[in-house]
Every structure is written in structure tokens, then in C-alpha cells.
Image (cartoon, rainbow, N blue to C red; front, side):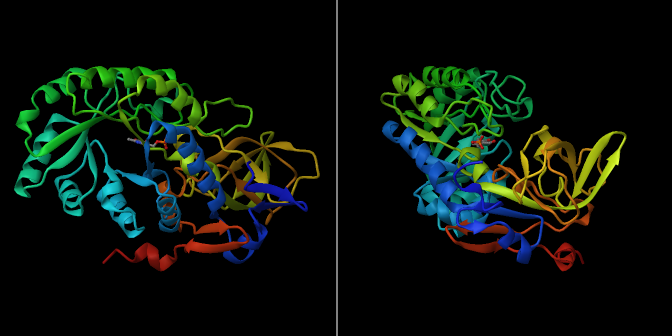
Length: 408
Ligand SMILES: Cc1ncc(COP(=O)(O)O)c(C=O)c1O
């Protein structure tokens, strides 16, 4: 928990609002986000990387809620988008195209055309074939497009294997020899201005050394080309999902990088570090059952609202809305979906609970709602934004009609 989420008077609050006051009229499951925490996280990144002159592009894939994007835009941060849909959302939230970076290993022709027509500031290119296609599209439009080449540095990041992106077995980026070749043959791309190298080696990075190795390799490759002086080091700044964990702060990344960055323009693309601990998911207990010595707490939230535990084995703390007075006992918190992996927490510690009691799954502001699905024909949950004592539903709960809307 952090300063935005706390117990007061025996019940859990978000900023100036008791969460029961949201759960009661809106129902559960529901995502709740703290504006103050998002802004604090952005300030922390700005303080760490400001002295390096870095520009920040929020990685929209982490949480694409329009109202939240509006808050992020007002904080003066750009956006890292990975699809035409994300670019469209960023534009709708008021983010100027020049502050949008378009990334992704498999951009379609239509998406590249859309990005060029929108005038996005940068395109991060991930293959020679994409370079060739982009050159053709830019030439057709008589446009000069600013690009960064995404390097796959072949380094092992200290993180979960499913969110490491810069190792030799990963689909992402361009290997060093090929990237050097593209730089040497820049004349073949007269409509592409290769101004930088992009190197994002993974998410939830638990150490800074692999990032430093990747940055050094990117610099070596760029060195012979004096106009390639932007380094986009991606995101990956970690979030503490477990209070006992010690993880490097953004400032530690900045301090480690500072000595090697003289003369370079830096970009970063944080996602998780901006929104993860600014959001929680409220759920209600449906049933409690003891089975083969295990206590199952069955709640109305599931892998269709929060996929991370099923997808990555991610562990999120779960706490009751009413501050516990009784002893905490082990519980397996599960959802109603017909999958054995629909387990929100295999090892929660909770007081004795009854049907109707509400709980909060913590630190789910990143890669939570964006991965929600209609699997089992479930309705995606609403999202609520809290700002001081004010709160509002910024996305409503889906209805049965929504489920059928696109079918003929
Ligand atoms: C290219 C790129 N940039 C930035 C990010 C954001 O990472 P994080 O949320 O860990 O900061 C990702 C996430 O996968 C990414 O692929």
C-alpha cells in the first residue's frame, strides 16, 4: 500500500474516499485509480530523469483508460503506442502527435500509414523489412520520417522470463550486426531519418546492470554516425508488489546511466512505474468453501478482469475492505471462470470472511484492465477515478447488450 490507499476508521480508503462508498453504488468487480498516486509516480520519474534532459513517453499499453490518459497528458508526458488503436486513444486524450512514439514488432501497413498520416513524432523500427516498407510509404507521401532502430542487445534481463524482451531468443528488435548494416546503408532510406536507437530489454527489471550493458552496446553501434544521438531506453522500472522486496528506484537507473550519457538525448517509456500501484480491483466474496484442507474464497473478480496471475504467475496482495480484527488465515482466492488457472492468489492471508464481504486486489493499475476479456461471456468491469474527495465512473460496466453489439 502507499499514501493513496490506507485504512481509516476500520475501513479502506483511496485518497479522500472510503472504498465502500464506491463499491456500494457501482458494484464489484470494479477498478479504482488514484490520480494523486499517478501524478506522484510521474513526478518521481521526472525528478530522476529530468537532470538527464530525458523526455518521458508513458507506455499506454499498461493502462489505456481515456480519463487517466488525460491526467497523464496534463502532466506533460508523451506516449509510447503499439497499435493504431493506441495512437487513436492518445490523440483522443489530447496528446499531440509529436509526443507519440509508435513501436511494435509487427506493425501492419495500414497502421504505419495511419501513423504517418497522423504525424507521430517517432517510429521505432524492428526489422529490415519494416524499414523497407516504411521507406516506401514515406516516399509515397514525400515525408521525412524520424525513426529509431530497436536493438535486440542479446542481454539477459533480471526479470520474469515472460517479460524479458532483449535476449537472443526474443522476437523483439534487431540484432547488432543487422542494425549496424542498416546504419551503414542509410542512403537506401532517403525518407527515413535514423535519429536514435531504442533498447527496451524487459519489464519489472530488478537490476540496472543489464540496462547499462544494453545502452553501451547501443552507443557503440551509433558511435560512427554522429546524427544518431538519441537513446530510447524503454521502460521496465520495477514496482514493489511485495513490501519485503528491495528493487532499484528510477533514480538508481538514472544515476547508473548518467556517466555514460553525456551528449545523448534520452527517452524513457515507463508504463508499470506510472500506474501499477495507483490502481486496485475491488471484488466481493461469493462463497467460502473448505476442500481437502484448503480454504477457497470464491470472489466475483477473476482472470477475465485480472489476467496477470494466470498469465505470469504474478502475485498481488489481497486485503479486506474492513480492517481485519480477527486472526489472518491462509486462503486461496479464486474467480468464477471455468479454468484451473483462474486463481487470483494461491496464498492470501485473510480474516474469516462471509459472502458479501469486499476485498481489494492491490497494485493492479498496470496490465490489469487492458488485458480484461469477455471470456466465459463475462462483462468487463467499470473503472473509477478518484481525485481527493471526488470520484467518478470513467468507464461503465459492460452490459449483456454490449456483448452482442458486434454480431449480426
Ligand atoms: C517497447 C516497450 N516500452 C515500454 C514498455 C513498458 O514497460 P514497463 O511497463 O515495464 O515500464 C514496454 C512493455 O512491455 C515495451 O514493450
